[in-house]
Length: 505
Ligand SMILES: Cc1cc2nc3c(=O)[nH]c(=O)nc-3n(C[C@H](O)[C@H](O)[C@H](O)COP(=O)(O)OP(=O)(O)OC[C@H]3O[C@@H](n4cnc5c(N)ncnc54)[C@H](O)[C@@H]3O)c2cc1C
Image (cartoon, rainbow, N blue to C red; front, side, top):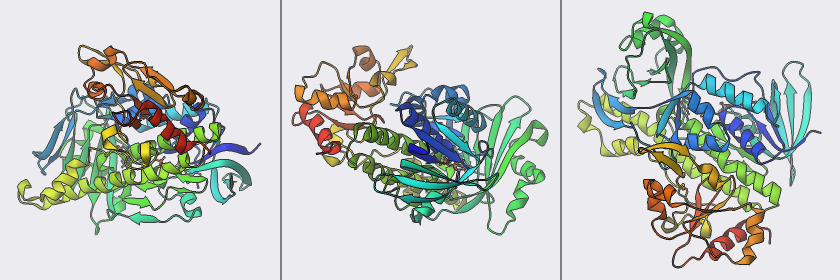
């Protein structure tokens, strides 16, 4: 039978994450990809604290853990690699998500393991088939693919379709969704090397603000190291893939005998965002929806956020026959957040250019400095599926609820998100008095009532500040807070508001 709950076009990081999550919610999922194997050019290299937490939801945190190293810090430097600004030391820092701020991973290893996990799941996978067209009905999507080996066309239908088919998305084109260009379009060469010698380059990421050539050094998961260099408009892009040119570029750091070039590619770094992330029963996620230059290391993270935001909504609406507000909130929530990532990633590139042009770092405008450094603090969600329809700061709505963790000698030794479950959770310090009328609804959405033990509150500074007052938090499956109780909002009002928003009347 060629009908599925969800069809996912594109099995890159965003599509794979969505597939694993949807399958974990019991959805019948089809994944289509035109390639036979995983992508093998140098791309994502950092995974954030939230990225790690999202990978817990999909059961792939151990894959990242096994193949990653914690990033020690970052700074902007002059051409001699002397610090000129923005130095951050990340050693020992653990965020509210329960993970280090940023870790470096080797994508061929993680993508391989994630693909294996998918192949061993109930997700139906069809490779070497290209998606070519779609047609929407009120409650389904029919679409066509072509087998790239024998040119045979095949028809499928699904309740929902997710386009995770990357920057040149055919799904986006088929849906007639245009993109907004936020005007950072520059060519860069990206080089991954494997060290032949023990590492002497340190664990800090460096944004090199050299007027002659901007560059980024990334202390990837050992024994790998990454460099990125801008290519000027008048230069021949292809020549930057020449080993001799690469050796000259890296010469400031290492001599050719000290490393092997393992992967190299020229990319145009874009900053674009689709005007819509949804049309009817079809959604765009990942690079199909937004592309950011990699300076913040947040492009794939943004794709993961899309996948996480959308998957539980699709699953809950199909399983529980909820109204369309639930899936419609995906676009409302994700567009402003991913726009921030695209805009601010370009901000770091612009700041590098400004530092490179300036005689002294102090000359650089504070606006640019704020835009560049401020970009690392991601915003909360503002509008969408929250109490009252918008994220009210006084209720911490739109913020991420901290992960319960176990500490030993001030170090996190166990992450405990599983106690919140995979669906909604109501979290408090003491038992809640909930009206009996709400139990049927809470059961339907499989909401977990969690009374947090003292040991998860007292030692965790993030949790402590949330649980200080005797409030109850209604937390969504993606760990964003729907709302919390206060002197004006009772627990029954909180539940009732959610019910009103997602149940069919
Ligand atoms: C140099 C560089 C460094 C980066 N570093 C980071 C980083 O450190 N951290 C980070 O978070 N992000 C980073 N990014 C961004 C990140 O790599 C991308 O955002 C991410 O790979 C996008 O994933 P995706 O799944 O949306 O798309 P893709 O990975 O592009 O996957 C799309 C998939 O769709 C398939 N496909 C396309 N068209 C069709 C079709 N018609 N039919 C069937 N299948 C199709 C393709 O074969 C592919 O498998 C970096 C990007 C670059 C270029």
